[in-house]
Image 1 (cartoon, helix red, strand yellow):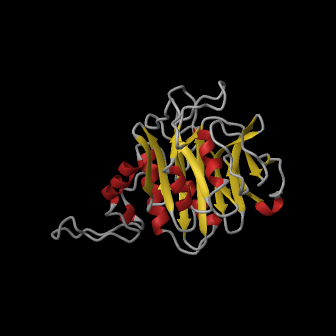
Image 2 (cartoon, rainbow, N blue to C red):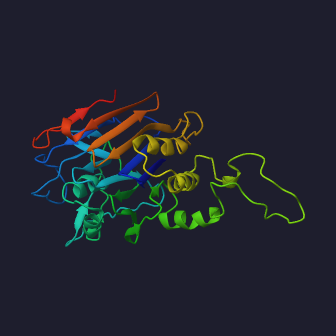
Image 3 (cartoon, rainbow, N blue to C red):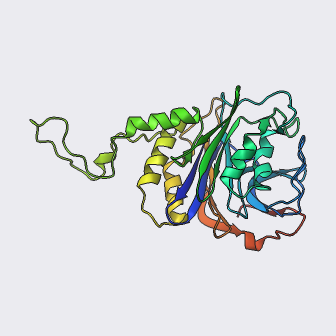
Length: 312
């Protein structure tokens, strides 16, 4: 479970809730331009952009949940249980990428979403885990910059690419259904409702906010998608990272409110907001709502070694 939002009200911002039952060793990781990512089946780019985001580092390799590069391209991966499909064999003439390689592969070489989409049209995602101890995670991806947002979903018939005008991604079901379902809520409004029930009954609102009655409030991915989209598209313009954190809070999962099939508590372990213009990665954790920040200016973009920032 996760919620991701691309917001263009004032400066472009990219935010994400990580909903998970336990730590995956997450830390903020900065990757300099000279670092060489050890891809399994493709060569890295000769000219690389620096990137930064939340990751676990395994055997010296960052496995990103979400990240952005110094040119302003942002990408996040979200669970896509039961729908994600990875091919068992590589194919000649395309980029054969393991799922965990998608984010760094695109960020090290692309400046924009449209450039990344062009590469994804030539990409085949193959069933290659990082190691035997790290099984494949079923994923789909959201890509955003100051102009465009796209979703990439690996399915059994290939990699599907969708323009995302809602600016939101959660988990299942596939993205086209999520967008279609927004029509079920097209009657919602931030304004007070008027009586269309009956001209014969003198019905009036008795409280503020009744125009949005019916907005789903549960933690399912469909409901989080609708709720985040409604608040994103009706929120005040010109707000910054704090405002996007408020929208993410509306889709956050409270510890103990969702129990997995194995009996574990799934909750919003951290939330982050990326401000590409400022080169800033803001984050806060479930147990500490103080917002912390790591900036590209604090890193060493010309270096060769990863720079890791433990969550404070």
